[in-house]
Length: 372
Image 1 (tube, rainbow, N blue to C red):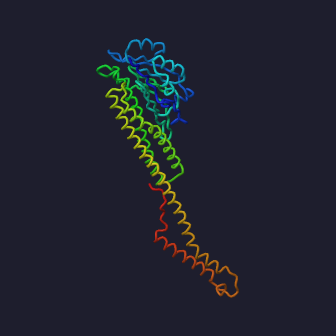
Image 2 (tube, helix red, strand yellow; image 1 turned 30 degrees about the vertical axis):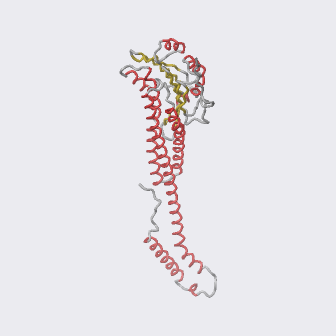
Image 3 (cartoon, helix red, strand yellow; image 1 turned 60 degrees about the vertical axis):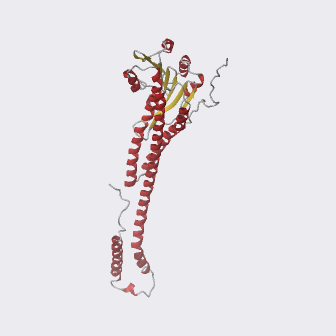
């Protein structure tokens, strides 16, 4: 008899890859919890008679639920007790090599697999009240035969409420074959939240571009740079998924059914669409910057034109004043009775003629005035 070789990961492929900084700011719940919220455990049992939700489950009850032989969706929210989470994962039979991937924060976006275990780590991105304020929290997901585990960094009253309702209403009743669908639905749920964010950023960039053309102010550039920074952080989260999902699809994982694989193929298309939208918005940020620079240049040109007009009008007047300011004895105009008045009239006439000529040529039109 030949022994079946044990599957081993490529050295370093499943190592934890922590980010240098979080993609966004901490959500309010983590600020109040000092960065790590209390760990809570809930379990969804996919029973043939219907879905059973255990909202407040204790770690000791997992043995009984696991012994029932029914598919489980174990939901963990809050990561203040990492040792407790490690104990829960060990009770569920999750290989030790996957523990750092799910517990280290902030973790890089990734899709990894080994044997019949699939691990996905994403960041739930959203805005606080303004597109300038990006917040994020980490969500880790792990799929094994008859077991799905989700670990959310930020606590929620009902993790993935819409998916729980979908399981409850599904006919026929959900079973273990639906866990792979549930995995890609959770990933889709996280990715779909990015599309409204990009639309909100596009609307804000339209307003900033209009403001840059109408009344360029330094704050327009400042807000554009903040939006560009948030856009870059979103792109950084999507970049690893572009090739990791394609690599995952080539592996033909046995734990993934046809529907789940189809869902991941659609997910790859969604990632491409989001990435293309990010590229379009990045060019729009460049357009706002260029519009601001053009408007600022027009305003500077207007200032230089105004100075030129003043210099042009006063140059001949200064010339006349300079001539008659000389103290030579043989200057017949100095002894004219009406010489002073005649000089003022001449200077006024010259200034009037020059002003009229410049006005007709359109030099007095303000091209940098605010557009309404």
